[in-house]
Image 1 (cartoon, helix red, strand yellow):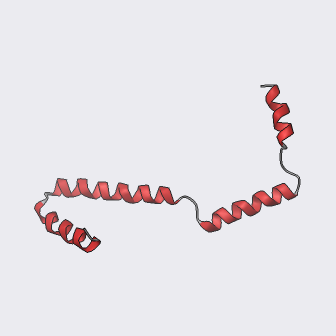
Image 2 (cartoon, one colour):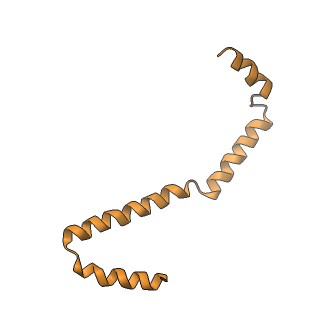
Image 3 (spheres, helix red, strand yellow):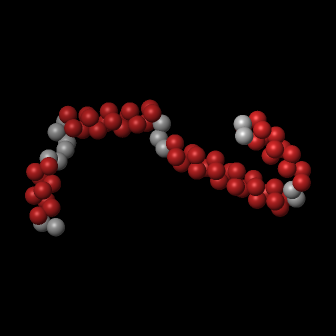
Length: 76
């Protein structure tokens, strides 16, 4: 079914619902939209900013080598 067909069918059924059913449906729709927002995560700009910050820390020598991590793990 194409999107327009789905929209039309939903509009056809809405008047048949009572207020409680409409409220419940509205809650479900809002929860779907909130899930989509969570899936999006951070913006491209924020992602690039975090990458730039990480690269700057690395260029300043602020990192832990693999060997250092292995040594630290031995004391765990």
